[in-house]
View 1 (tube, one colour):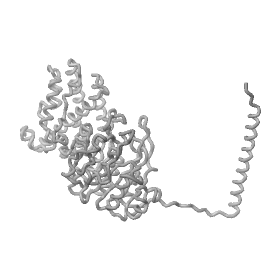
View 2: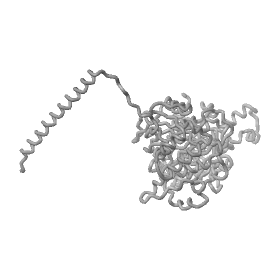
View 3: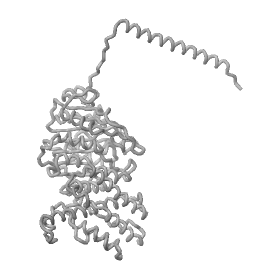
View 4: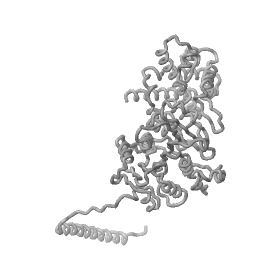
Length: 532
């Protein structure tokens, strides 16, 4: 834990230093600042990871092993860097003419050399590049060399390797905190049409531990159709074991895909980078007919304007997937189109015959008594796929006040033991900037997971019901509608009862007397009023 804190603190310092460089050259809060910081951060990590793996291989094979043989001996998921592509070399030659061009050329060559492993594909199959020509974000040509020198100097000061070698063999769970820190200035409610909201660590852990109660899992395929930064997939992969799962993902946001790539690299999941697809999952799903999945996790956007392609979704080719229907376009605010209902249906379609899924939904979904919501719930229960629902405390997401629940599906669910849980009373309220956020303690996380997995009925927290019980309640998934109403009886003597009632009577008589006096005073004041 101490190592984690030290590492996180120093990494945040590196991010702050890179932000400072951007600010000094007029790029503070500029639209390109995020690209610069995230790409330079990635370059630094690839550089140090390469050096670490080379050092480890030389210790095993001998110091005199040649470069070509050394590259052959490295794992296929380790980045390949030539001597002139490393930070130390750039640091040593930073005073040469046209250094900005050298810097950009270096990053471009690294991107080309490592494209097969580290590039992200779009729906069409085109691969992206790891790095932009970062110096071109500086419009003043005379400042570009100095800007690139400043970046290299900040990178040279910090090492992922020195004093942190053990982290290259560890899981980067704590990178979630770094990720939130890295994007907090670029991720807000006003962040554009596809603003990303990262899933809180507690919710990610709860989902992973409920979906995978033990680690006795063989090779599996894990998928998120609205992946964002990938925090749900990272927690799931850690619970299963990175060597026992392959990650698949889709998202329309290039920024999310870029951050997911970094997350996969940091979490020993580089082998899954080729499965990161930038696409519109609803309109142009890449994996729909290619793969079915063992595990699916998703925190989809709840409301989003998809009116531009809504008519396309009414075609026969989409009908089987969107069995419950397609949300209509509101008369006033198109941004309130309930796109999450399409993601739920897409996930149901994408599960294999034994698949399991966890989906974050607005809590209103679990009780709506008409429309698409009701049809989806009916299909889930009638098919026997409902494992349970956990309704989370309000404000569990700092970026949205919408109350959320987590829907757990399992193609092999036990329809006689469905767990419905209301965790709304749990958590502690903390203030984050202008927002209030509810944070679950580790003990509360554990309580939710154990209660759910052990199928326990706990007063005011959870109930265990059957599919028939749910049908009788008009397919409501709300735990509160199944809690017993308890009336508490207290034995008292006739004398105590009489004394208590007399006390109530005396108090009421006193209040009535006081009320009459006040009424009389008001009348007297009204009589004395005169027009001036």
